[in-house]
Length: 98
Image (cartoon, rainbow, N blue to C red):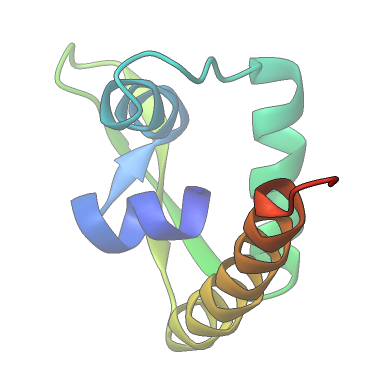
């Protein structure tokens, strides 16, 4: 979700990523900040995203993240895996037990 959010929205800070995910999901998803920041660190260590310091819309210092080329490739692969998984689950849930 983080990679897709950065692809769609561009450069964002952590809070912006969380809010974008929540808004895009019509607030059906709630982002846990205790897991978001470790996830951002892991994505950065894997070179899927890059960070740089800047100032937020409130003029506060914040770390901004952006998607890398490697991150775009991973997003494509992850999207394909997700689509296969949801198709499989759909097939299972759609089966009747007659």
